Length: 208
Image 1: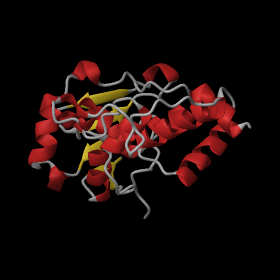
Image 2: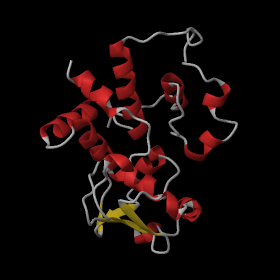
Image 3: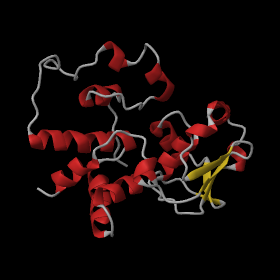
Protein backbone atom coordinates (compact mmCIF):
# COMPACT_ATOMS: atom_id res chain seq x y z
CA UNK A 1 0.00 0.00 0.00
CA UNK A 2 1.43 3.38 -1.04
CA UNK A 3 1.88 5.97 1.68
CA UNK A 4 3.90 9.10 2.40
CA UNK A 5 7.20 8.17 4.11
CA UNK A 6 9.01 11.50 4.32
CA UNK A 7 8.88 13.95 7.26
CA UNK A 8 5.30 15.13 7.78
CA UNK A 9 6.61 18.40 9.21
CA UNK A 10 7.76 19.32 5.69
CA UNK A 11 4.14 19.17 4.60
CA UNK A 12 3.12 21.85 7.10
CA UNK A 13 6.04 24.03 6.05
CA UNK A 14 5.19 23.58 2.37
CA UNK A 15 1.60 24.69 2.94
CA UNK A 16 2.61 27.56 5.25
CA UNK A 17 0.10 26.36 7.83
CA UNK A 18 0.07 24.06 10.84
CA UNK A 19 -1.79 20.92 9.78
CA UNK A 20 -1.32 19.21 13.19
CA UNK A 21 -0.10 16.01 11.56
CA UNK A 22 1.89 15.02 14.67
CA UNK A 23 -0.80 15.67 17.25
CA UNK A 24 0.40 17.05 20.59
CA UNK A 25 3.95 17.69 19.31
CA UNK A 26 2.53 20.41 17.05
CA UNK A 27 1.52 22.45 20.11
CA UNK A 28 5.01 22.44 21.64
CA UNK A 29 8.26 24.31 20.93
CA UNK A 30 9.56 21.17 19.19
CA UNK A 31 7.25 21.82 16.25
CA UNK A 32 9.34 22.25 13.09
CA UNK A 33 6.90 24.81 11.74
CA UNK A 34 7.60 27.03 14.76
CA UNK A 35 11.35 26.72 14.23
CA UNK A 36 11.34 27.06 10.44
CA UNK A 37 8.09 28.53 9.22
CA UNK A 38 9.15 28.64 5.60
CA UNK A 39 8.94 26.06 2.77
CA UNK A 40 11.52 23.23 2.82
CA UNK A 41 14.41 23.11 0.38
CA UNK A 42 17.37 25.35 -0.39
CA UNK A 43 15.10 28.01 -1.94
CA UNK A 44 12.55 27.95 0.86
CA UNK A 45 13.37 31.44 2.13
CA UNK A 46 12.68 33.01 -1.24
CA UNK A 47 9.36 34.75 -1.67
CA UNK A 48 7.10 32.90 -4.09
CA UNK A 49 4.20 34.43 -5.96
CA UNK A 50 1.67 31.77 -6.93
CA UNK A 51 -0.40 31.83 -10.09
CA UNK A 52 -4.13 31.13 -9.99
CA UNK A 53 -3.38 27.50 -10.82
CA UNK A 54 -0.72 27.39 -8.10
CA UNK A 55 -3.17 28.63 -5.47
CA UNK A 56 -5.72 26.00 -6.49
CA UNK A 57 -3.07 23.28 -6.47
CA UNK A 58 -1.84 24.22 -3.01
CA UNK A 59 -5.39 24.00 -1.67
CA UNK A 60 -5.79 20.51 -3.08
CA UNK A 61 -2.42 19.43 -1.67
CA UNK A 62 -3.41 20.82 1.72
CA UNK A 63 -6.63 18.75 1.79
CA UNK A 64 -4.77 15.61 0.71
CA UNK A 65 -2.16 16.04 3.42
CA UNK A 66 -4.60 16.83 6.20
CA UNK A 67 -6.58 13.64 5.59
CA UNK A 68 -3.62 11.48 4.59
CA UNK A 69 -4.93 10.68 1.11
CA UNK A 70 -2.77 10.16 -1.98
CA UNK A 71 -3.52 11.54 -5.43
CA UNK A 72 -5.40 8.63 -7.02
CA UNK A 73 -7.72 8.13 -4.07
CA UNK A 74 -8.36 11.86 -3.73
CA UNK A 75 -9.29 12.00 -7.40
CA UNK A 76 -11.77 9.14 -6.92
CA UNK A 77 -13.35 10.99 -3.98
CA UNK A 78 -13.76 14.06 -6.17
CA UNK A 79 -15.36 12.12 -9.04
CA UNK A 80 -17.80 10.52 -6.61
CA UNK A 81 -18.62 13.91 -5.06
CA UNK A 82 -19.13 15.43 -8.51
CA UNK A 83 -21.67 12.76 -9.47
CA UNK A 84 -23.74 13.34 -6.34
CA UNK A 85 -26.50 15.89 -5.90
CA UNK A 86 -25.56 19.01 -3.96
CA UNK A 87 -22.43 21.13 -3.84
CA UNK A 88 -19.42 19.18 -5.12
CA UNK A 89 -16.88 20.74 -2.74
CA UNK A 90 -19.04 20.10 0.32
CA UNK A 91 -19.69 16.52 -0.82
CA UNK A 92 -15.93 16.02 -1.15
CA UNK A 93 -15.22 17.20 2.39
CA UNK A 94 -18.05 15.05 3.71
CA UNK A 95 -16.50 11.93 2.12
CA UNK A 96 -13.12 12.76 3.65
CA UNK A 97 -14.67 13.29 7.09
CA UNK A 98 -16.48 9.93 6.87
CA UNK A 99 -13.19 7.99 6.61
CA UNK A 100 -12.76 5.63 9.56
CA UNK A 101 -9.29 6.94 10.42
CA UNK A 102 -10.68 10.47 10.58
CA UNK A 103 -13.59 9.34 12.79
CA UNK A 104 -11.18 7.63 15.20
CA UNK A 105 -9.15 10.86 15.36
CA UNK A 106 -12.19 13.13 15.76
CA UNK A 107 -13.53 10.99 18.59
CA UNK A 108 -10.22 11.42 20.41
CA UNK A 109 -8.83 7.89 20.37
CA UNK A 110 -5.65 9.13 18.67
CA UNK A 111 -3.74 12.45 18.75
CA UNK A 112 -3.48 12.69 14.95
CA UNK A 113 -4.99 11.17 11.82
CA UNK A 114 -1.69 9.39 11.14
CA UNK A 115 -1.85 7.69 14.54
CA UNK A 116 -5.52 6.87 14.00
CA UNK A 117 -4.69 5.30 10.65
CA UNK A 118 -2.09 3.06 12.29
CA UNK A 119 -4.50 1.98 15.04
CA UNK A 120 -7.11 1.04 12.44
CA UNK A 121 -4.57 -0.89 10.36
CA UNK A 122 -3.53 -2.83 13.46
CA UNK A 123 -7.07 -4.12 14.03
CA UNK A 124 -7.88 -2.16 17.19
CA UNK A 125 -11.37 -1.04 16.12
CA UNK A 126 -14.71 -2.53 15.18
CA UNK A 127 -17.63 -1.02 13.30
CA UNK A 128 -21.03 -2.35 14.35
CA UNK A 129 -19.25 -5.21 16.13
CA UNK A 130 -17.24 -6.29 13.09
CA UNK A 131 -13.48 -5.88 12.81
CA UNK A 132 -12.50 -3.25 10.23
CA UNK A 133 -8.84 -2.52 9.44
CA UNK A 134 -9.30 -0.31 6.37
CA UNK A 135 -8.59 3.38 7.17
CA UNK A 136 -10.58 4.56 4.15
CA UNK A 137 -13.71 2.66 5.25
CA UNK A 138 -16.63 5.09 4.99
CA UNK A 139 -18.92 5.22 8.03
CA UNK A 140 -22.66 5.73 7.70
CA UNK A 141 -25.32 7.24 9.93
CA UNK A 142 -26.01 4.91 12.85
CA UNK A 143 -22.64 3.13 12.72
CA UNK A 144 -20.96 2.40 16.05
CA UNK A 145 -17.16 2.67 16.11
CA UNK A 146 -15.67 0.92 19.14
CA UNK A 147 -12.28 -0.06 20.49
CA UNK A 148 -11.98 -3.83 20.18
CA UNK A 149 -12.45 -5.63 23.50
CA UNK A 150 -8.91 -7.00 23.46
CA UNK A 151 -7.53 -3.49 22.90
CA UNK A 152 -9.49 -1.58 25.54
CA UNK A 153 -6.60 -1.78 28.01
CA UNK A 154 -4.17 -0.08 25.62
CA UNK A 155 -2.40 2.71 27.48
CA UNK A 156 -2.06 4.83 24.32
CA UNK A 157 -5.79 4.79 23.57
CA UNK A 158 -6.86 5.40 27.17
CA UNK A 159 -4.46 8.29 27.66
CA UNK A 160 -5.80 10.02 24.58
CA UNK A 161 -9.48 9.43 25.29
CA UNK A 162 -9.10 10.66 28.88
CA UNK A 163 -7.69 13.94 27.56
CA UNK A 164 -10.54 14.34 25.09
CA UNK A 165 -12.94 17.19 25.84
CA UNK A 166 -16.49 16.17 24.90
CA UNK A 167 -17.05 19.74 23.69
CA UNK A 168 -14.46 19.15 20.96
CA UNK A 169 -16.29 16.13 19.54
CA UNK A 170 -18.15 17.25 16.39
CA UNK A 171 -21.93 17.28 16.53
CA UNK A 172 -22.30 14.50 13.99
CA UNK A 173 -20.52 12.12 16.37
CA UNK A 174 -21.37 11.01 19.90
CA UNK A 175 -18.64 9.72 22.23
CA UNK A 176 -19.05 7.36 25.18
CA UNK A 177 -15.71 7.66 26.97
CA UNK A 178 -16.49 4.91 29.50
CA UNK A 179 -17.33 2.31 26.86
CA UNK A 180 -14.66 3.54 24.44
CA UNK A 181 -17.08 3.85 21.56
CA UNK A 182 -18.57 6.49 19.31
CA UNK A 183 -21.78 6.64 17.34
CA UNK A 184 -22.31 8.35 13.99
CA UNK A 185 -25.35 10.50 14.70
CA UNK A 186 -25.58 11.97 11.20
CA UNK A 187 -23.44 12.55 8.14
CA UNK A 188 -21.00 15.48 8.40
CA UNK A 189 -21.86 18.82 6.83
CA UNK A 190 -19.60 21.70 5.78
CA UNK A 191 -19.99 23.30 9.22
CA UNK A 192 -18.55 20.15 10.84
CA UNK A 193 -15.22 20.46 9.03
CA UNK A 194 -12.68 22.08 11.34
CA UNK A 195 -9.86 22.31 8.80
CA UNK A 196 -9.35 25.61 6.95
CA UNK A 197 -9.90 24.37 3.39
CA UNK A 198 -11.34 26.41 0.53
CA UNK A 199 -13.01 23.54 -1.28
CA UNK A 200 -14.21 25.75 -4.13
CA UNK A 201 -10.58 26.19 -5.25
CA UNK A 202 -10.26 22.41 -5.48
CA UNK A 203 -13.41 22.22 -7.60
CA UNK A 204 -12.04 24.94 -9.88
CA UNK A 205 -8.76 23.03 -10.23
CA UNK A 206 -10.47 19.82 -11.36
CA UNK A 207 -12.74 21.83 -13.68
CA UNK A 208 -9.84 23.28 -15.69
